[in-house]
Length: 114
Image (cartoon, helix red, strand yellow):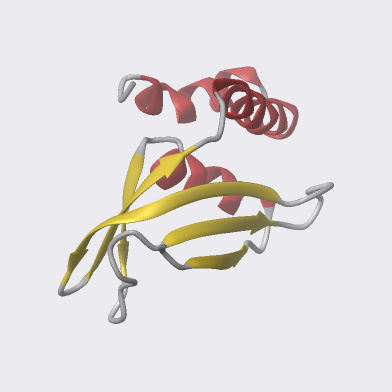
């Protein structure tokens, strides 16, 4: 059985959360640079939080590969509905905060990964 670790991620503002989400969390996987990568198979539960965010956003992933300078984490959802609900929530937050044009530009590269 693999270990599970909660990873709190605190952002100074919503824009920082949006940028990180667009760059790292909107894809099926990401590389996390760290000197102490977790073992392959470790489940990571990311708790993303920022001022003005009504409640944290939770994402789950598991360590797929370890490298000398970090680890590759693949994201997963329990159901397709959970994924759609989470993505819709983030898109709505981005649209409300940044407007429809800028939010769609930020998320456009992520949609090509799927």
